[in-house]
Image 1 (spheres, rainbow, N blue to C red):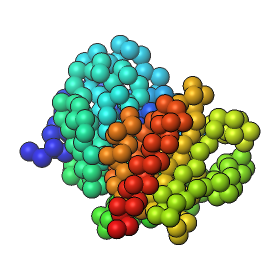
Image 2: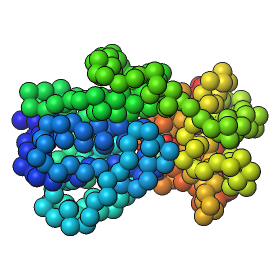
Image 3: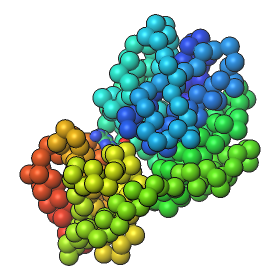
Image 4: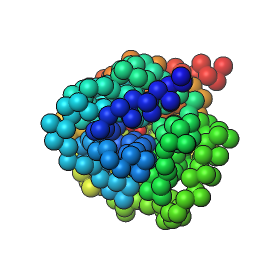
Length: 316
Ligand code: AMP
C-alpha cells in the first residue's frame, strides 16, 4: 500500500484527529493544516477534527485555531503538516496523541512520527494535501473552504508561482482548486496586502541593503528600527523576497533582531544552496529558502561571511 493510502487507513481508525503545523505560521502552514482539516470534516462528519497551534499572526483571513482541551489528545490521531523538525511544531502537545503522522515538503532531516509522507519536490505542503485528496478521491470530499486554503498555501510558498519549486503539476493542482467556489482575486489581494508601516520598511530595505561583488546581500533590522517603524517579527515575511528582484543579488540574509536580543535569520537564494548553512546555525529549510538563528552580532557576521563564500564559489 502506498503511504497516502496508509495515511487514509489510519485516519479512518480514529474518532478524534488533531492537526498541527509549525510555529510562526505562513500561508502554507495554515493552508495545509486547515485545508486538510476541512477535507476530513467534509468526508467524515462523525469524527471530531481539530486544528491546533499558537496564534495565526495576521493570517486570520485564512483561518483561526480551535481551542483543544488536553483530554482530547487521549486516544487521538495527531497529524502535523509543513513542519520539518519536531521542535518547530506548534504546540508541544502534538506528542500526546496515540499515533503521529508527518506530512511535509521540506528535506526529511527529522523523520518524526509513526507514518511519514515527505515529498521535497512538492512546491508546498498544500500541494501534498491536494495530492493526498487525489490519491483517495473515492473516499475523500473536497469543499470550497478546503480548496481556498490549499490554493492560498500554494500561492504563498511559490511566491505566486514564481519560485523554481513551481512545476507543471503545481499549476495543474492550482487550476483544479480554482474550479471551486471562492474568490481567487480577493484571496490573492489579501495575501499581498501590506500595512503602510511594512511599505515604509520595504523602502528601508532597498535603501540599506549591502551587496558584495559576488551578489551576497544582507539587511539588518535592529529591534530599535522595528520599534521605530512599528513592525513585529511576523510582518517581516512581506519583505523577505524583496532583494530577489535586484539584478546584482544572488543570495541574501535578512537579520531580524528579536526582543530577547538574538537574531532570526531569513535566508534566500537564486542559486547557491543555503540550507546546509542554515543547519549550522540552529535552522534549516529548503535549498533556496531557509531560516536560522544568530545569538549576537558576531554570529551575524559569520553567517554573512559564509553567504559571501557560497556566492563566490557559485560564480566560479
Ligand atoms: P522563513 O524565513 O521563516 O520564511 O523560513 C524559510 C524556510 O526555512 C521555511 O521553509 C522554514 O520551514 C525554514 N526554517 C525557518 N526557520 C527555521 C528553523 N529555525 N529551523 C528549521 N527550519 C527553519
